[in-house]
Length: 564
Image (cartoon, rainbow, N blue to C red):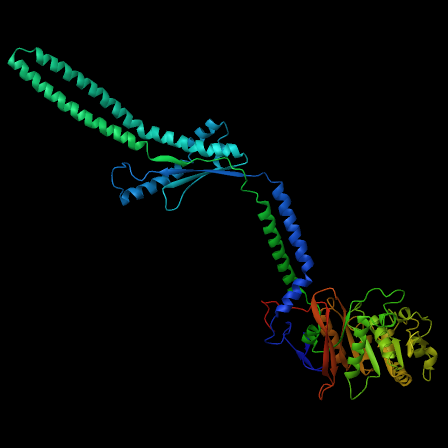
């Protein structure tokens, strides 16, 4: 890939990457400009995402949440001192309970008591230990506020009942057995006591007294065991209690319509910003004078805003609206061209572009108007022998023109082929009949003589040429004129196309004065500049001043792009 470096006429090769001056950094205003440029996309994406989130949230079945709190006792006996081991045991017991509370038998019994399907509870119930406490939180979610509050209260009770039954199973049997033995032993004591009172024989009394002592010892032992059984039974029933029952919620926990909508707005805007940065990163079109200078090394001689419909003519804005900002832009372009070559005034100027449809003919016509308005005698020549348009712009016939003048040969009367226009001091030489060999005609010796003859009849001759990359006509004419103005469509002309066009003109010996940046969009938020230039010692080009105006944005180097 070829790229201009320094003044026009100086060509340099690079490695195919986009060039950028080292150390040039993204400025905050460029970020702001980028956001302003893509503000419509950001708003559309944000509002679309927010609207979708709002509609979905409004049409989603609301889900409620109810919670009850359970407490695990720290020690089995309140009268004893709580040891660290008891606390650890209670914490482990709490985690065990948290798992057992969601076991299938507990859920099935809870579903039976509530009269619902057990599957509806499996995913709705969550039990979590409260950190650094001996509390358990039973949470139930569902669309029915009353039902989930009942479930949050019934589930712990079902578990407590089942746990009590399991823990008291063996203890109750042991206690009941001891109570039976106590009654039997008490009966033996009563019977032996009665027998002892009725005994007359000393040996019989001795035997009965021994039996009575044994029965009393057994009775004391049974009483002690019964007390232990009752203690164990009491301990088994005090491990888990309901600390705070659940109440029916009034507000659903989801969907949170406002939160979802707000979050969707933010996400939509962020996605749009990302898309905007990506679009700018992938966009390789020329947008500002900085882009022109960066990719070609050429000066931007003028920046013209996108023209609106100018009525019946083909956007001859400089004639119809002399005080319009666009007309002032053409005057700035005129001034810059005049200052682009002080030592050798420009008498013949070629206007071309890299590709079709970039506005070169409109630029040619309006530039000719503002040139003529200074009092100079100006001739505008339509050398686009394939798609001529200047006769439509100035509303003149195209029966005769450039091609008929060339066919007339030497000594042709130039003035007879020129047509006056409504603008004082401005004449037009239309293309004439379209020939089969435009390039050969434009590169002929007769064309060279015709250019010289035209320059004798006017102070300035402006040639409207076909695009450089489309055909060779512009390259052929470039070496026959004093200067070349290259028109670029801001936001449409590709960087490589503009670089190739400038290189092609330079290669054929054309004196490329600079670039006219056309069709800037003034509705967008970037800044552009009207650049003034005049010649320096080496390159015949020097900046004079710059007047700032609003228009389309500059090409940005994003944060992850490195200077070439």
